[in-house]
Length: 176
Image (cartoon, rainbow, N blue to C red):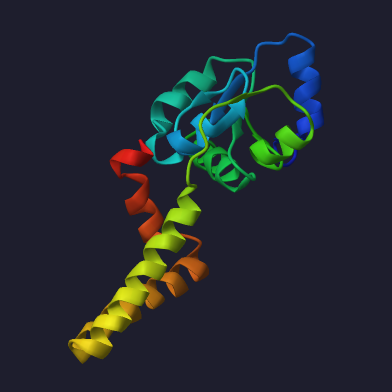
């Protein structure tokens, strides 16, 4: 485990799992992503639902690290940073996330395949742009503001790495 960056590789994590150690492993992906595939023994607490204060308090009395995992590692890093800011120090991100762990052959639980949140955003954004453009062309030119708004949102999402449409879609009933 790399203590400076507080990360662990899937190989190192697999060695700990194989040694029979109990690991406190939190998957911060959305529930549908978690249901599709997750590491055996992981519990699902989506990033937007982490109780930072309670988790930081719990970490102060725990000797064992809290491991965060997501799809590719980005949300896990965010969770670690958020928890460190809240006062916890014993948090570790799993490098490469679930994808890297699957590739490394770690034990996983598989469920029904779902449409990822990223694909849902692309489908919704594309549909809104197509609909807005068609309605603007055939019905009323002022409706062209809709695809312009969606385009501006996508640029904002790219610059800030925060996607408003993704956050909105994550709260939809089918993503719970």
